[in-house]
Image 1 (cartoon, helix red, strand yellow):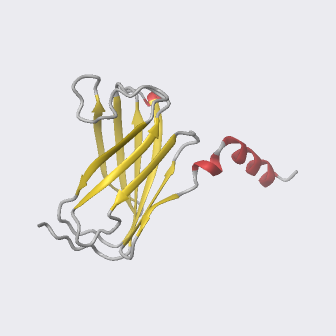
Image 2 (cartoon, rainbow, N blue to C red):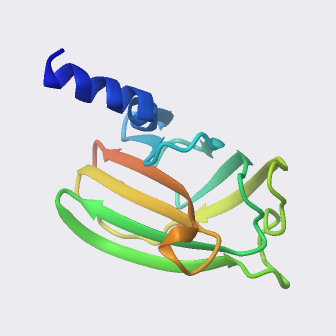
Image 3 (cartoon, rainbow, N blue to C red):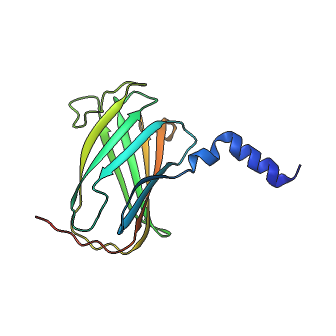
Length: 166
């Protein structure tokens, strides 16, 4: 058996191909949004966004349907945003602390269904056309070993957005 065939079989068996499959979040004349898992987890996770357009909008509604594999009593996220080969942002945030949390999904137990809607806002800014990649990692603690969720979000900006802030 050729070495390439062996490598392909190992990747296929490890879940590599499924982890790389991109799902269309939405598509419009000005932008395309895609997401995929960046690990081989089989998390049940579905996203939605309304409206799909960037032009003329500064507020959106995001929906999340998720069956987590761990309790969400503590949830820390690390988000890295890339434009081309350059990392343009890294944002770390604790979403769930176990006490008086702002998000309705905080406190959900392993295997429970999380079905929630969140508001998304944008400040007026100029973004160059092209492809942006956001890597979002979810941790149930402060160690790298506590990683339980990794998602890639791709934004393909087809034309520069113009916002209306009314």
